[in-house]
Amino acid sequence: SGPSSVANFNCVPAEFGPTEASDIEGVLIIGSPRTAKAGLSDGTKKSIQQSSTTIVYLERGDGITFVNKAIQAQQAGARAVVIGNNMAAPWPYTMKDSVGEAEKLGLTIPVVMIKQEDAKALLELSEANKSSSTSSQAPMCGRLKIQSLAKDCAVCCDAFVVTDIIMCLPLCGHV
Image (tube, rainbow, N blue to C red; front, side, top):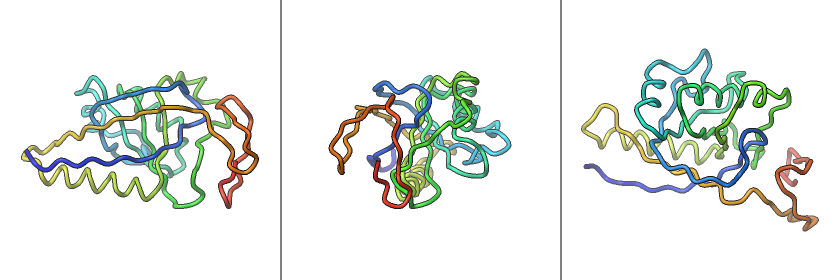
């Protein structure tokens, strides 16, 4: 067996889908195509279905909504989706569902975003895992842990929760 790497990345839960605390451990699959444009490949769907618990990594962009990306992964059998941000700023970035797709389409899995720098590191770990494995399909273990959805505002010191209506300023990221 090859070298083992551990990395922790902070993430921002989406404003849609399940919002309760969760702890999902399973196989991490890098989706193809990464933006899910034109649908997930048959190979990605097969990889998702080979594990009872799969976390799928996808990337922001290509005109595909966050919900659409998550629904594709959910329909293939994924238990959670991690979206890699395709730009460094603004960060943190909260994924929204302005047209109510998540409810209409029945999204039931958690969706989180990691910052661009962490997305690059995750992809590098995946490549290192592939090159150190003797198998052509080297599964990578992943764990998505959402501990608390409550946040505190650093400027006004008021606490807020997921159901509150808030605004994120685009340049500084202040909420």
